[in-house]
Structures are given as structure tokens and as C-alpha cells.
Length: 199
Image 1 (tube, one colour):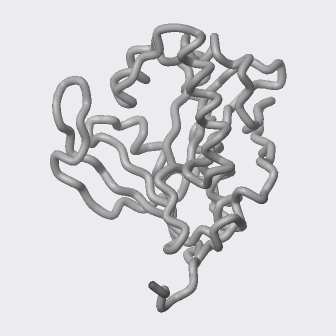
Image 2 (cartoon, rainbow, N blue to C red; image 1 turned 180 degrees about the vertical axis):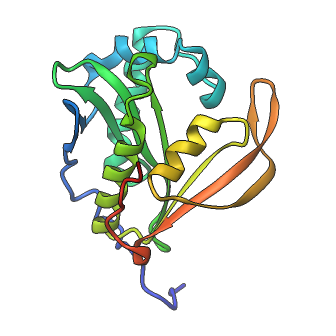
């Protein structure tokens, strides 16, 4: 069966790219995950807020290491693109992912978390902006961001990163306390390309 329109991002394009390290301000970078991040990943998923909004816990460093290996492999498989957000001393500050990639349409969804010690510094909006700018340059044309309507902090991150609120998906995601309505935000490449960080 032949497609009647070309792929927005030709399959194999992303797999052929070396994962970049993206600079952030305040002594932080977005870098590829390392297996040595496993203990820090386990600790991050012990945080009640990360468990609440990401509906996951990690029970051992080995389980965390397995997650990291799967994140590393996912890049080559063009399934998801994962970065660790880290301080200059190597300590883990957060995670940024482009997931649910649709290469035909050039669409991806952004997901993120920050560890408790890194919150309130504007790090998450910076990481979203850096990943968005890279993604648009790589050929994506639409980036989406969803969060529970009860997650006001995530809504602020989306707004600061220039993602317009498009609507609400009712009862769309399962959390530990039941199904939540989800806000849908999005940013289009042709709405400005490089994303300005709103203060």
C-alpha cells in the first residue's frame, strides 16, 4: 500500500542522529541517560508528586537501570526520545521525553518531571523549550503536552513554554486515584519555530 503523502519525518532520520546534549541556564544540561543514573532514577520515582502524576514507582536500582536501557534503545527505534536533565556535577534534576512519535504527521508528545530539589527554578519550562526547539529543527511540526486538570504546576510549565491550551479530554487518563480530565496544550512549528520562554 502506497501513502498518498510523504512522511513528515522520513523513517530512519532520527535513528541516524546522535543524541545531542542541550544546554540550559543555571548550570544544567539535557544529556543522554547513563546507567549510572539508576539510583537517582529510583529516588526520583519515590517522590509522591512524581508517583501521583506519572503513576509509577521504581522498586530497585536494577529496575531503574532497565528503564534507562529501554530509554536508550527507544531512540534508535524511533519510539521515544529521552533526556536526563542534570546539574554540572552530574546529579539528576529531571527528565524530558518526546514520546508517542508519529513520524508520518511529525507529531510528538512532551513529558517531564523534576526532582523536588529542582522545583521552583524554572527548569521544567527551560527543558521543554530546549527540546521543542530541537524537535522543530529535526522536522517535527506539532508538539503536544497533556496533564491532569488538577496539576496546576504542569499547566504553568506548558504556558511558560509557549504551549497553547487547546481543550480538555474528559476522563482521558488513569491515575492512582481514578480517571482524570486532561488539559491538552500544543505548539506548532509554523507558529514561530524557536519557542520563546515566557517569564
